[in-house]
Length: 192
Image 1 (cartoon, helix red, strand yellow):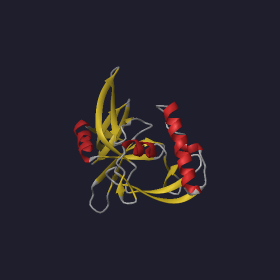
Image 2: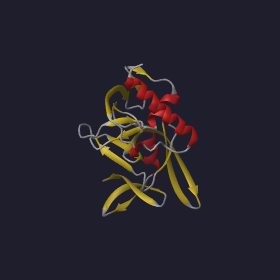
Image 3: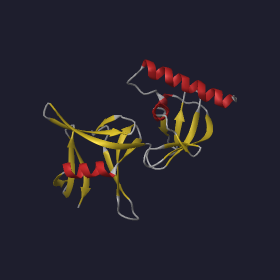
Image 4: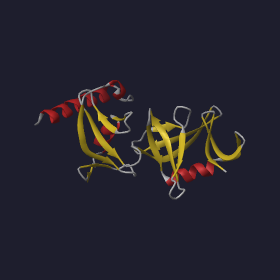
């Protein structure tokens, strides 16, 4: 085993031990500043499928482990980060996909939750807002929800249609729009 492989395995062991102890917490990847060790042939496709060297990673536990140590740095590249190593990966669109929507009412407060392909439940809120980018080539919307820090989930088209069905029509900031309410906040999803 090469030294780089040893470091990567050692770093993954650290992450695995952390996740066993801190079941509902993510590793503090933002606090780690290991040396950059180069590119690794891992790619996250637009549909959320992870590939290593052109082959799909079929072990959900491995994908979940990697998804917990992904970071988007100020250079706009995605990295897998352990305490001892930082490797650059490719992401076709966003590192996560919002695959379903849950609507709940708690104490008369409407809440919308997105469930990601990693089974994370994300509350649509001020901390996790929705963003819709319009493709300039075909005017198609690409909706995203912030998962954590600067990592987003692409919202599946079927989930986006559910959002449209739940949206209300109104005027915000002097413009007619469709909007959603969640966690006592208003989120514009379309202006016209």
